[in-house]
Amino acid sequence: MRAMRYHETGSVEVLKLEDVPTPKPGAGEALLKVRAAALNRLDLFLRSGATTMPGWSLPHIGGFDLAGEVVDVGAGVERSRVGYEAMIKARVTGPSAKGRLDIVGIARPGGFAEFTVVPVECLAPKPKPCSWEEAAAYPCCHLTAYYGLVLRAGLRPGETVLVHAGGSGAGAAACQVARAAGANVISTVGSDEKAAKARELLRVDRALNYKTQDVAAAVKEFTNGRGVDVVFDPIFGSTAATSVECLARRGRWILLGMVGGPSASIVAAQIMFKEITLHGIVEFFADDEQIAQAFALAEQGRVRPVVDKVWPLEQLAEAQRQMERGEFFGKIVVKP
Image 1 (tube, rainbow, N blue to C red):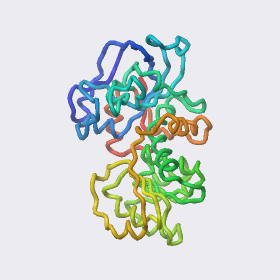
Image 2: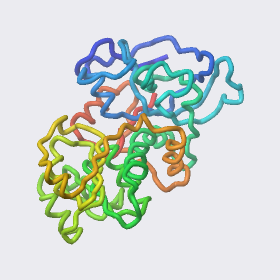
Image 3: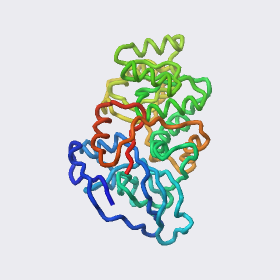
Image 4: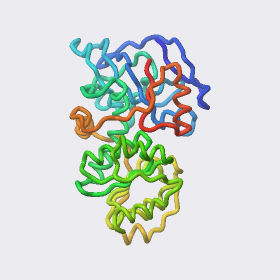
């Protein structure tokens, strides 16, 4: 089969299209014909060497957001599973998990290939309203949004959410999940073009170009000086001070990424006197019931991923360059 692998970390040039043996499913596993796989920032961080994760090793096939069709199964799995159309729950749970965080596409080969093997407990039904590309784009970011906003922040109808980086995969998902929960949504983006897309595609109440607008002032104006109930923050470093300033008393701050830097200067008194609660979240820690709740939004047609561009597998390097440049809105997908 064809697979995009890298044998060393570095720039996108380390990605190589190679012919490798098609994997065979072992006991409790299914062989999946990959129909589409979506990119995430973590794929780029691992490939570049900027970070590492439990179980990750070289050579590596990345891609932990994917969807496909079961074409074979291993011992102990009913043959009726063949033909099953699935999107993947990336974290492996149960007896087949190899470590504290055993994740398809990280501790195991992922979806940037024509075929991949996954434990059967990782199979979730492909949502009927979604294309293969949308199904691949759904799991990680929309689980993150649901886990953070609904389960951790306890978002309620009528509350107001500030979503940083609304044009990113996680940010776009958060805008959609917040709207589905009945909240008002303000989102920051990096250009007027992305602001227009956020209003059109995500139906946000206010889209702010953080490069040209005073975000805190705009939030105060929108909320009549009160501030937002929840901040959904995949950025942190460069947005931390703004997040604190924008939060209302007893606001909840959902932290899920550090694209803007791993540290920031925060005035403790602002946290204390506003009684702000900070929730750090990792979507891979969601349990099966929580994942099912998040995935149900897609099956019900209440949330549908925004796919910016679909690249052929052999152009994965170009797809990752697009993500590195920030020239996308929603999710970038590759197809074998």
